[in-house]
Image 1: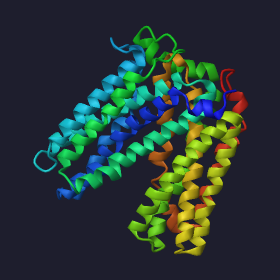
Image 2: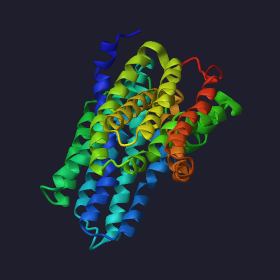
Image 3: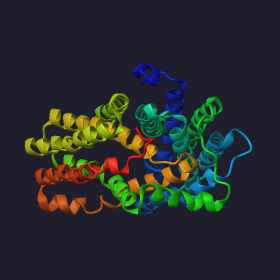
Image 4: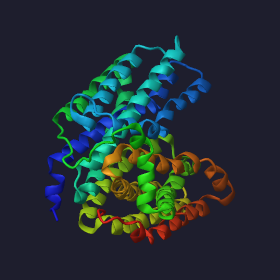
Length: 411
């Protein structure tokens, strides 16, 4: 087994970090930063709300992921070629978006934002596939942690960083700067090496579209395949339900938006990065299975910190502690979960299968948040966060079936 120093100091990890940065940068530009631009131009709030729909490509990226498994661009190979294409597309679409106007031509502005989101979702497909193929088995956990660190740093740059720049220059200039920052992704793609153990790509569209799904269910067996998919939905469900209500909860306790924002962007951001790195390093030593248990238990019990905060009320040190503990444990859980998803993919269809699995993972985030306000209102905050902790149990019970899912190639 490789030492931690050898794993984290490898050239592959540097590439994974930078691809994580390139993957995370566009997200805020069609989300929070976009909303800030529109709000500063006095665009109607109803229209701003509708602009959340430009994020739809992230939900349905599995629909065109087979094309990125099937076809090989003429330069740089299957993975690096598509990375270059999507990154150049992002540079141009972000730049074109800079020259559109949300007040004068909101339709054009929305179309450009949609193109940015589509290009970003497409880059995610191929970057996820590249990471799953380029990393060795013992590097999967560390790679997941390092990738998440790059992703979060990029979101800080295009989120808080862009807002700070917007106080010094026009929004057009801000988006042109962000388009220029995407050149980091282009440089990374040029410097990256091709995956050495990438399998032969599908030979036709049937192999690219149908076979990846058939292969997954055949390899697992139908019953076990559905168990795996259900586990993917449930494993981080407790975190999703907890985070869905933390901001309204803390506002009701009397914390200001500045308090919440500063702690979330400060302690929370640092704790999440540290958790991802610690989780990745720990996983190198103990493997995916035990890490899923340990980190799953930790992220479940982390929710109890909010129970204590609800009991204490407006208690600033406890608020800082709760956010730090939740983000640290969630960061560890993210690292092992991404490694687990990568281990499920057949290398012939990495882009398609990973896109499908990550879309299944998103189901809980998209749909479970809706009733959380109703539940919190009727249970009260202490009981609500106790329920959040108990929600970890079904996923952990399914984890007892891990050895029935396990493939010989898994760690």
